[in-house]
Amino acid sequence: MAKTLKSPKKRTAFTTTVFMKRMMAVSGLVFLFFVLFHAYGNLHYFQGELEYDHYAYFLRTFLQPILPFGGFLWIFRAALLLCVLAHVGSAFHLWARNKRARGSARYAVKVSKADHYASRYAMRTMRWGGVVLLVFIIAHILQFTTLHLTPGGHYEHGRAYMNMYYGFQLWWVYLFYLVAVVSLALHVWHGTWSALQTLGAIRSAVIPYVRVIASLVALALLAAFMSVPTAIHFGLTDPPLPAQTYSQQAEAHGINWNNH
Image (cartoon, rainbow, N blue to C red; front, side, top):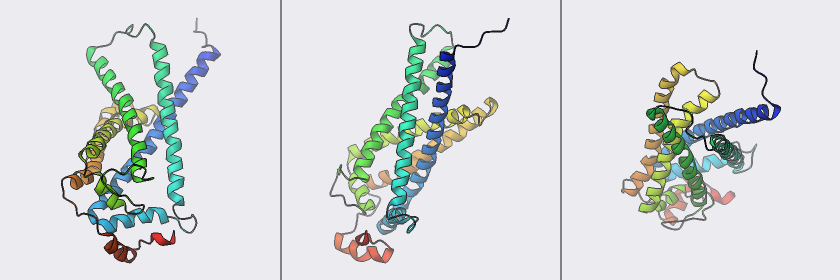
């Protein structure tokens, strides 16, 4: 006799779980493309102060006059905020569901020690790494976007090069950033192939190759994001220009904050 269909309640729970997994996967991939672009953008720091600040200025003038000054960035930030809410909300929902499902029969299903430890490692990496990243995102915005946190010196809107230089002179800021970027790399390493698998974009036979690619992407992000803070912290970059010299040269490089 064929098995009876699941109850409506179980079907609803199953549909919700599938939706949450897919929403988490899609929002995670959006973040992956963002951090890749962000890591590339940070490398402009090595071109010098005026070139890096011009890059920051360009992002705020992008799509003008269709959008007002900074309009593109605010739309982009709003989209990222929605992705954060979707990603964190989905993660919490799936964690709570799994916790309820395990109950007292947590170890009822027998698995090999290797599979058990691998699963526990991946789960803890994603869970606690996600918490670290959430804290870091908030701190990062307060430090370099709103300038409510200004460790290391006097920060100014528009002088992105100088603000980063002051911040990464401090060992604890550098260490905090390092922990966050390592967490990001681990999150990307596990999350990329997991998200693609959830979306049905890959078959089980090619998962090992996707994991290799995910590992390379994670290492590339780690190297790109840490290259600038490391260079600053160990004195391998030029200090920011004095205020008067900077104001004289900024407009020649297409940087004019006075009109905005």
